[in-house]
Length: 113
View 1: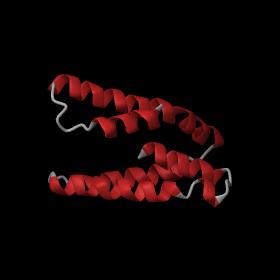
View 2: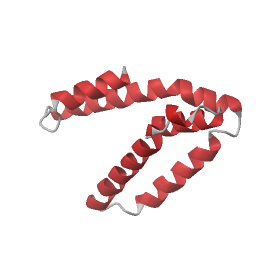
View 3: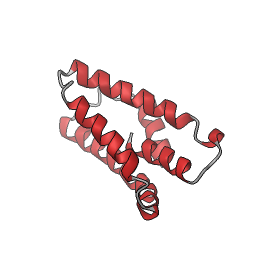
View 4: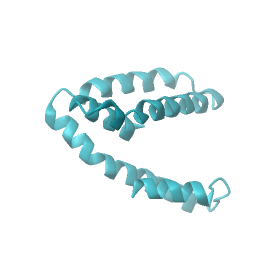
């Protein structure tokens, strides 16, 4: 979600044509809805306010200075790779890959690369 937020804000900030980033608002909306479902069914809806404040705060902080948005854009690849490593670590510790589809894992690794 962070990477999509940064990509969208970066493209808006630099005035790219709408066609180049039109999918990002849709992907962000899907991720937010998924996060709300996860919070709802795990009984942690009180954390939704924290995530909403973090989302909106991050949205505006990214463009306070030009170097912040540029640095965030450069760190997106590192953050995406780190999330994949966290998933691998979790799989390694639990020794259970029953929840992971080979197709979805391959697609995720491909988009990260």
